[in-house]
Image 1: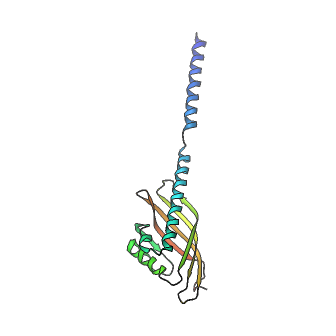
Image 2 (image 1 turned 90 degrees about the vertical axis):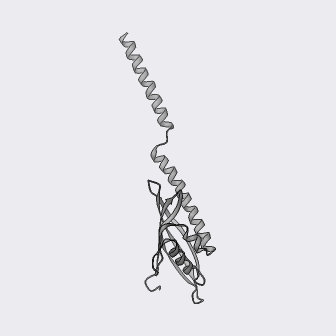
Image 3 (image 1 turned 120 degrees about the horizontal axis):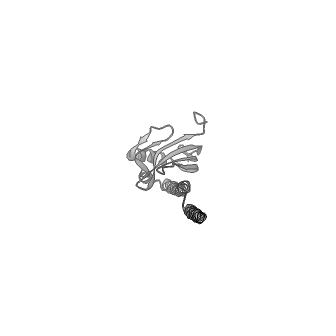
Length: 169
């Protein structure tokens, strides 16, 4: 009788552990869930980058400014920091008014925080202007810190700096 009870207990434990293993196999680990969310967030940010580039082509400084958080900051080279939508719009409008203005940029890396509410976008840009009728090209790098606001990714801080030596030449 004791052997039968022991076998019954052992069998019950084995069945219970099999059910637990099956549940664990079907469960999504926190790391996998974060990875899936992170990939979706990265895609959303890439979508924002594409939208931004379209707005640059359209020279729509007002819409570009709305891509920033309320307290966002734009830090272009050789110009004062633009804080808030009005100043950011003014900075972008001034840049885009330069004759021959053309800007393209591309992320090299987008890293989403584990909390899923902030991200880092690091990349390169190519800027062309012709203020005196002669085309000038600048290449450089940028960093945008994105923050998720009410489910939408917005630029909280945006800094650009040139690869050219001081003096532009």
